[in-house]
Image 1 (tube, rainbow, N blue to C red):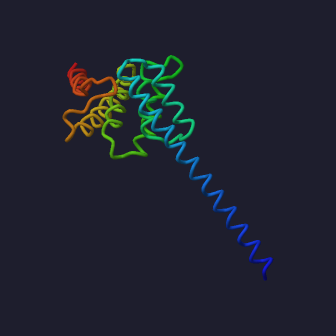
Image 2 (image 1 turned 180 degrees about the vertical axis):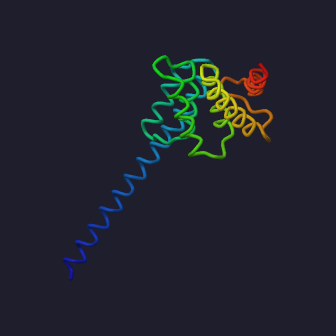
Image 3 (image 1 turned 30 degrees about the vertical axis):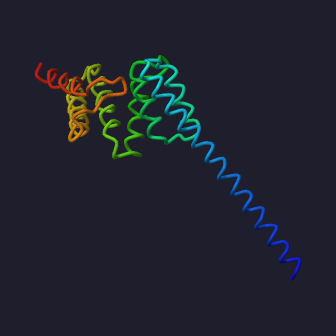
Length: 169
């Protein structure tokens, strides 16, 4: 009985130690993620797009479903990441939107990228569908969020107005 009790205590101590180590690693990862996201936003404010993208990628290396990192990465893939396609950016923004349904900025960014995709589409039917999708995304994001800006600090009413203009032509 004494041996069994000693074994049990040793096992419990080891588990407690392992849990403490795992918790410490989680805290370290959370700190790194927070710092990388803050760094990404600082780089964006200074228009250092490649560095912002690298910071977002570091976060995604630790947490592939981090909605803020997906948002930043997806947005930057629209025009600042030479090795990425518009489709890559849209895919990341769709993942971010699915994870963080309450983030209108993500939906708006997806609307902007969808608008960009529509402008390149040759098939009139598909282009019309994409324009409609982009309008819905932007209208939904701006509803109740009149002052919403994109990651470049620009108003999202510009892309929305462009969609309405394009629709009239």
